[in-house]
Length: 126
Image (tube, rainbow, N blue to C red; front, side, top):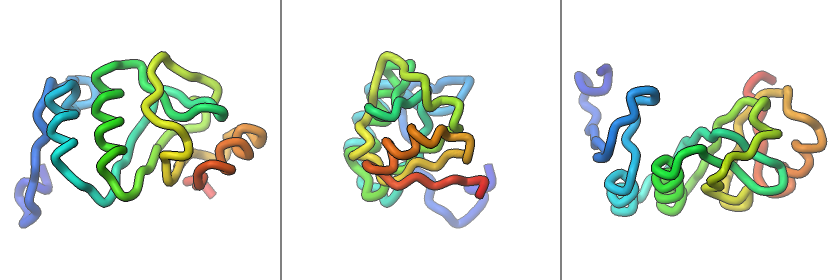
């Protein structure tokens, strides 16, 4: 709402809107993102394991996240440390494809070591 009344140009991604996250999902959204090149992609995840990468519980979200990652210069995953031991059905990236993981200092040291060898980990609460 704030951006709509500013001088910023707003581009709306098509697709089915998830009322819980108020975000566009599905193949229409993924196809649209494949047309764009962005500087940054901020992504959340359902879980992540230190040996794999971030995952999603939903096929529609996985498609959108994979498209966003493919077409951005800098990819950033935002997740609290409680999701470190959980991995859902659909991985959308490997840690080597992610530029930054932003999390909290509750991240287990062993998991930190594994992930930080493949992407930069930033602790938001330090």
